Amino acid sequence: MRLALYLLTVLSAAVAIQSTDKQHSYRNFKLIRINPENDATLAYLKSLYEEESPYTLDFWQPPSHVGGVVDMTVAPSDASSLIRDLSARGIHYIVAIHDLQKAIESERSLASWAHPPKGFGYERYNSLDEIYNELKRLKRERPSLITLIDIGQTHENRTMLVVKIGGGQSLDEDAPSIWLDAGIHAREWIAPATAMFILRELVEGYETDPKLQAMLDHVPFYILPVMNPDGYEHSRTMDRMWRKNRRPAECHNKEWHTVCCRGVDLNRNFDWYWAVQQHPYPSASGSSSDSCHDTYHGPAAFSEPESAAVRDFLEAYPPKAFISLHSYSQMWLIPFGHRRRSYPNDYSSALRPLAIKATKALEAVHGTKYQVGTGADLMYEASGGSHDWAKGALKVPFSYLIELRPRNTLFGNGFLLPEREIVPVGNETWAAIRVVADEVFSQFAQPFLRGKADKKPEPISLSKMGLRGTSTEQTTATSRSEPTVVETEASKTTVTTTQTETTTKAISTTTEEITVAPSTLATVTCEDYGSYCRLWKVFNLCDRRAVQKLCTLTCNPQCRV
Ligand code: 0X9
Ligand code: ZN
Image 1 (cartoon, rainbow, N blue to C red):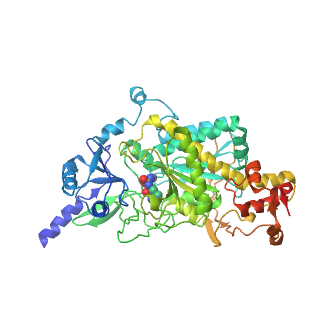
Image 2: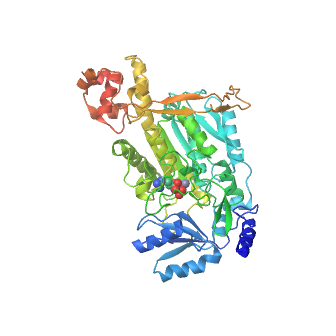
Image 3: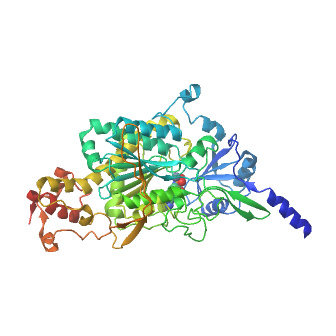
C-alpha cells in the first residue's frame, strides 16, 4: 500500500504536460489513410479514436461511416505495430506520407526556403504579425473603404482583428452584411491565406468592378482572417499540427499519473448543442470532455475569449451570410452538423440551392469539385460548431462552413497544402463567395435600394420585411462590450471602447410578417415571374412568395394588383 502511494506520488510529480518549449519534430511520422470497408473496421478505428489507444495517433479525418476516408498520423515508434495490427485485421491502408517532417518542409515553396521573404505575401503562408501589418497597410491606403475592429483579446493577449470592407466607416447594426472567418483551427493554414486573398479581391475589385463597388457600398464584408491567433502562432513556431486554442493547461488524473493539456477546440465551444454527445460512441459527436482531446469542448459554452468575442460581435451586428473557412476535404457544409439528418427549415429552399450554385461557380474556375451537404451527413456529427450556432441561434439566413482543398483522396497532403495552391484556391473560393454575396445583395439590399429610388413606398426596414430569420422564436442576446474601431495613422477614426452592457434583441419574425397589409399581398402577382427575376436579378433563387412580397415594394410597374 505504502509502495503504491509512493509510486503514485512519484508518478504524479512527473506530471505529463503536453507542451515543451522545443519545436515539435514530425521526423518519420506517417500519415495512414484508410477507407473503412465494413462495420468491423469502422468500429476498430472508432475505438482507436475514442478510447485509450496504445499508439500515439492524431486523427486528421476521424472515422465516421463505412466508405468515409480516415486519415491519422502515427509516431515512428508506433508505426510498425500499428501497421502489423491493421494487417492482422485485414484492414487495407496506404501510407500517404512517409515522413511528415519532410512534407511540412515542402509545404513552403522552394523560393521561400532559398530566400526567406520579408513581409506579407498573398501567395505565402504568413505570420500573424505579417497579416496584421498588411491589414494596417490596406487601412492606411484606403481609409474610407477599410475599417479595422478590435473585437477582443486571446488567452495570450493577442488582438482579434476584424476588417470591415465597404459600407462606410461606422458600424451599422441594421445594414445587411457578410461575415467571413478563418483559422478557427490553428493548423488549417490555407484558411487564413484564402481569407486574405478574398480581402484583396474585394479591395481591388472595389476600384475596378462597378457591380462589386455597388454591392460593397451597401453590403460590407466583415473578415476575421485569424480567429485563433494564439493557436496559429503556436502552429507556426512550435507544433505544425496544433488545432485548438491555447487555453492554459487543465490537469486531471489518468490512471497512475496526472495529465495536463492545453487548448479548447473553438469549433466545439459555441452554444449549439454544446457538449451534447451522441450514443453509442460518447465522442462520436466529435466533441470531447477530455481536455487532452483535440475536440475538447471547453468547460462551458463560450468559455473561450475567442468564441465569446465572435459571439458578441455577431450578436451586435448580425450578418445575412456567415462563412467559416476550414480545411480540408473540399466540402461546402450546411447546418446542422450536430446530428445526422437534421436540417433548418430553409435547407432545401434556400441554403442548399445557393450552396450548389456557389460550388458550380467554384468548379468553373479550375475544375475543383466540392461535395455539398451537412457536416453530420457527409463527415461526422459534431456539436458546438460556429456555423450551426450562426444559423440555429443567431438566425443568420445563409450559414456555411467551407472545407477547402485538398480532397481526401489517395495523394492529398491534408493540412499541408503547398503554397503554390494558395492563389488557385483563393480564385476559386472567391468565385463561390461572390455568388453568396450577390445573393445577399439581391435579397437584402437591392430591393430596398429600388424601393428608395422609386420613392414608393417609403424605405422599409429589412427586418420588418421578415427576411432576417425563419424562426418564430424570440431570442434575446446580450452583448457585453462594444468592439473597438482601431485607429491608424492615416485615419483618425474615433476609438470607441466602452464596457457598457447593451442588449440587442435578435429580431426573429416569421417570413409572413411584412409591412404591407396582408389583404393587399394576397392579391399581388408578378406579371412575368421569370422575367422579373432575370431583369432585376433579385431573388436568384426565385422563391415565388418572396418575389411577390418584393413586387409590392420595389417593382410596381411589373406587378398587377
Ligand atoms: O471538425 C470540425 O470542426 C470540422 N472539420 S475540420 O477538419 N476542419 O476540423 C468540420 C465541422 C463540420 N461539422 C460536422 N462535421 N458536423
Ligand atoms: Zn477546421
